[in-house]
Length: 350
Image (tube, rainbow, N blue to C red):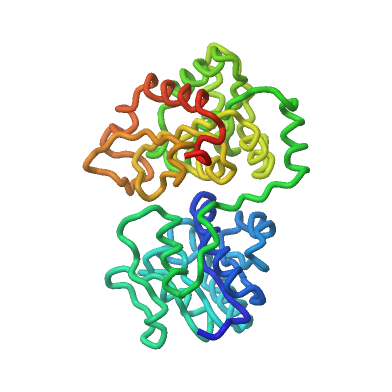
C-alpha cells in the first residue's frame, strides 16, 4: 500500500479503551512518519490526543445511532460532522473502534479514498478495501487485538506499552496535594457502570488495611463520583485524603505515577496505572478479564470471580451482582500487600 499522507483513525471510546489503542497508533506513526494522523474520538479525548506524539490532529465525534458511548445529536450536527471530515480528503480511514457492525458504514462516510479496519461476523466492509479489513478477534487482550490490524497492514510494531504522557507541571499539581516523598496508595472505587463497581464498604476496608501499613490513602474519582468517594471515606476508620472530583486527568495521572500502589475497579484508571508502571490490584466485576487485564501480570494483579453471565453487558446488574460480592476483602488486601512487598521493577526483571 502506498504511503498515505492523511489518515483518520476512528476510536471514539473511553479512557482505558483509547490507551489500549496507543501502541497501534505508534505503529502507524512509525510506518508513515510524514503522514498527518487525525484521531476521531469522544470530546474528552482531545486533551490526550494533544499530547500523543503519534497523533497530529483531533476531530470531535458527536455520537451516532447505535454507538452507546455518547448519545447521538440531531441530524444536522451529524451531517456537519461528516461534511467536515469529507472536506479533509483523507487518503486512509481506519476503523479501530470495534467489530464494525455500526462503525464500518459510519467510517465509510468519512469520504476517505481507502478504508481499513475490523469486520466481525455479518459486518459490512467495502469490496474494494476488503483486503485491508481483518476479522474482529473473538479472543485476546485488547492491545493485542488492535495490533493485529496493524500487523495485517504490514506495519511493524513499536512495542506494546501504552502512552500516557505526563509533563513536569502535572507532577507539580500532584505535589500541591501530597508532598514529595510521602508514601501513599491510590484507591479508586468508581467505574462508569455500577455493574463494574466493587462495594464501597469493601474499598474502605482495603483502605484501612493500607493505612495500617503506614501508607496515606488517596481516594480518587470523577466529579460524578463524589458521593461514592464520600461514602468510602465515611466508612474508613483512618481518614483518607479524598480527592474525588478534585483533580484533572493529568494531576490524577501524576498522583498514580508516584503512588506505591493503585487499588481500583476494572476501569480507566487501571489502564493509567499500567501505562505508568505503577503496581496495581484490579477488582474485576463483570468485565472480560482476558480482554482487559494488563499485559504485565507480574506488576498488576486482577481478581475476579467467574460466572456464566460474564462478560456482563448491563450497566446495572440485574441478578444480584454476584461477581462483585464473591470477592471478599481479605483476598484484595492480601493481593495489595503482596504488590507492596514486590520490587517495583519486578515485571522488568521477570
